[in-house]
Length: 250
Length: 289
Image (cartoon, rainbow over all chains, first blue to last red; front, top):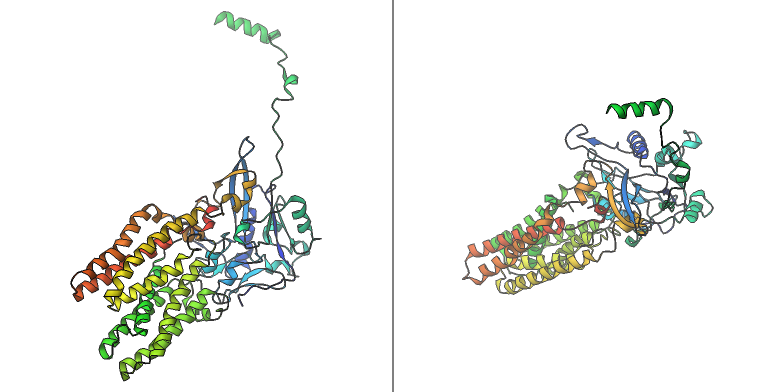
């Protein structure tokens, strides 16, 4: 049923730290790799070596430049974006076949690919661009929060988290239960002032973004300057003789 | 939004088809025998042809029947039900008229209501989307139904009613365009809220996730038509309203009536093309568009 559950037992999601992300795209590659080889239709690349390569990805990294209102140089932020597993997910309710659904047990939004007719309406309903129609399989693909990793007892415990989180070299991505105020992710959100993307769209996204920390002010003068006064104004010794000799010749 | 030809054909053809079926359901014109057969055949061909055209938009048309299941939450599913119900009721109504010369008025009224309901459900698929400010507006349901009613009257040969209503439709359309511009400009979603970085300062897209396009940029960040929007609006009004009105005001000839219908059809198709091409999805903000 594509009606949304009124309550989910857990609210699994990601917390993404915009202060730490360096824009390396490792999470993109890890996501594409895992989700091509595991649950559901593989994430295709069509015309991969041609003039117009197009592929489906569940996670993409944008980069934004911000000119601070307070003046000073622009700042650059790398901005990972994948499904936010919204509490009030508009993509779920528009689905005519029931292929899209939100799980009661953990709040993950999934697509049952064998029911998907590939109409694309869910992708239209999503403000975040989290859903992409696979160019080969013609079914809607989206982040599963690596549902086939997080509960997978065949994997070592440290690997039971989404591929993007596991691979991030800077620890910019965190995974956990955001309905539990005692969870690490909830504490992180509380501590750092995690925020929602496009709150005005009324989707109540589960994933939170941590704002960049306030940058240090660049001092107006160079505190090292006094120690860097030129020591020898006049060359002495061999260099002094060379200098004088060359001047005489030139 | 990408103006997919299959979707534009669907909305144009089925809108006019269900419009004609609505009029036939109301007994306008009150026809029987072969004449009725031709009128109903045109109505069913347009409505059914539109529905078939829509399935070309699907990635998996062979699973289309599954779309009847979620009528409780999904407007697309409700549209499937309304279209099937309208076609079924109008089919029985038409068969009785054509083959037994019996017109059951109440059946026609139900069929007419279901036909209009189908057009309404189609429009709600767009209107419900908060992600497209131009669509999340009063105008799609009102205009889709107005186009269906006026086009239906035109095709049903109800010249005296259709002529003033065509003019009214033109005025309504122009007003809707202006109000949609206002709605889009007033949208409170921006790159600042999309990234949450607006609290620091002015946000600008620096780099896209990749150098090429993707499903999202192809489907939802369509930009080709916008620069010609004003010209297309004028063409659409001329074809959908001005030409048919002039032709209807001339002494009546069947060829003029036919030309009026063809011109109106082309105008509606242009309007529907614009409906998509002009609509901006908020996801395009992430791509700096």
